[in-house]
Image (cartoon, rainbow, N blue to C red):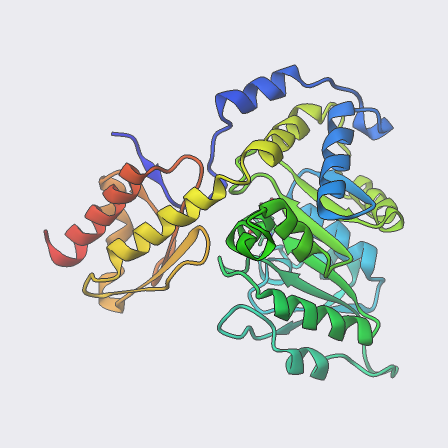
Length: 345
Ligand SMILES: *Cc1c(COP(=O)(O)O)cnc(C)c1O
C-alpha cells in the first residue's frame, strides 16, 4: 500500500525531471558568487517578483532571520502575528541572535493583523520603548490568503509610520495561484502583485513547489547585501549550491501552475470530511485543511489513520496538507479512513 503523506507539503520527493535538472546544473563556488545556477535562480526570482536582487538560502527560517536582522538593529522591534512563523516557529531566533524584540498581535479570523491593532502597537519615539521598525506579514497564513486590499492598506499604514515591510512568503505561490483570477489568471503576475506591497519577501521552494531544499530572499540590492553578510555569519554560505538552486529553478518554471491541483484536492478532501459526525472542517483556501475533532475522539485517530496508510499531524486540530505527491486516490483513502473512524463504516 502506498502511504499518502498529508503531514506537510515539505515531504515531497524531487520528480524525475527535477532530478535531471539538478544533475545537469552547471556549478561553481557560490561563496565566491560564481555558481551560475544559483545566480540564475536569484536573478529569475528577483525579476519575476519585481525586486532588484535575491539571495539563495538553505532554509526559510534562515531566510526570515537574515531578513529581520537586515531590517532591524539591536533594540528594534517588529510587529508580527501571534501565529506567524517568524514569531512562533523559529526558535526565537530574531531575539536570540538579532536582539530584536517581536511585538506579536492577535490575528483576525481571516489571518490578517487588524490595522487598528498594528497602529496601536507602533511605539512613539521615547526612550522607554523599543524602536518599532518593521511590519512582518505572512501569506499564506495557516493556509489562508491575505486579501489584496488588506495588503495595500497594511503596506500604506507601515509606510506612513516609516516601517519597513517583510513578507514571509513561504507559500507565496499558493497565495498567488489562489488569487490569480485577479491578475488575468497569471499566477506569476499575482505573485508579483502581492510582492509589490513589500520591501522584502522570503519564498520557500521546499514546500508545495516540491524542491528538496532551499528558500530565496528578495529585496533591494542594498538590503540583500546586508542579508548576505548575515547569511555568512549564520553559517549559510554554501559552495556548489547550484544543484539545489537548479531544483528550485525547475520548480519555479514547472510547479507553480500545478499548485491549483493541490488546492482542488484540498477542497475535495474538505468536502469529503465535512459531513462526518464529530469533526468540524474549515473550508480550505489553498492546500491546507484544518479539521477540529471532538475532544473525546482525538486519542487514537492518528494511529487509526496511520494503520490505513494515511499520515497527518495535529491532535485536537488535525492538519492535512496536499502536495505534489498526493493524488485523488490518496485523498479518497484519507476520507474513507476518517469515515471509518468517525462513523464505523
Ligand atoms: C516552512 C515555513 C518557513 C520556513 O521553513 P524552513 O523549514 O526553515 O525552510 C517559514 N515560514 C512559513 C510560513 C513556513 O511554513
